Image (cartoon, rainbow, N blue to C red):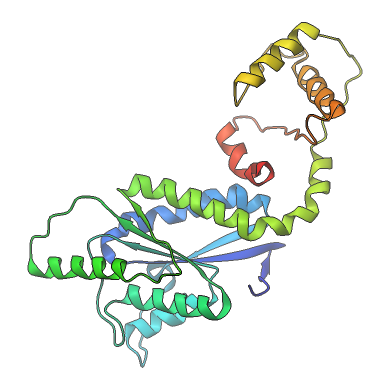
Length: 278
């Protein structure tokens, strides 16, 4: 992968979305997903994601290769880090050298990947029920099925049913890709990060063996345990002393102390620090 350019001290990750026009809902979901990832895992990894789509990055004009040539110059598929392709019942409009603009863009991505191992390519097929009402619609759908049948053997496509499932899939899979592709670059910074999250020290220490025993029992039988109580009742010390005891005994190697902002939810925390949990 080429050295990423920087903006505001963050590495830029460039994602391009390509598809026929019958999956507009899925395309319109992507900006919100990217914005969420930029606030979460991307920010944690020191990244900033930019999304490129022809409807937001293209403009009217002329090109010697026609409209597709103009879109190619603007999308710059070969310079992207990730290309997302989406299909349902339409394959798209033919270009001078492909059966559709989307096929042309994906083949450009595959050619670039074979040369440079970049961009990564994620292709999704909507499996929602569909009844063609004309021969033109049948032909379009047939092209989609043929494209799926002859998908490159080096690749793995993914199916989904409806835009809600697509949103969950693409969010989770981009998160996984970011963690695997860029997470290693952050390993050298783990020591600095862990120092930032050291639990605070408390002057007043009160032993609560019965409560600690109860907490141990809850943790052994539950994935997530929440501690609540009145302000000043010692919740912070209670938890920090328990974690300190585990570290001293060698049962855990590290812990994270995170001060949440008012109104912040667990769902806000987990995407941001998921890479630290493996």
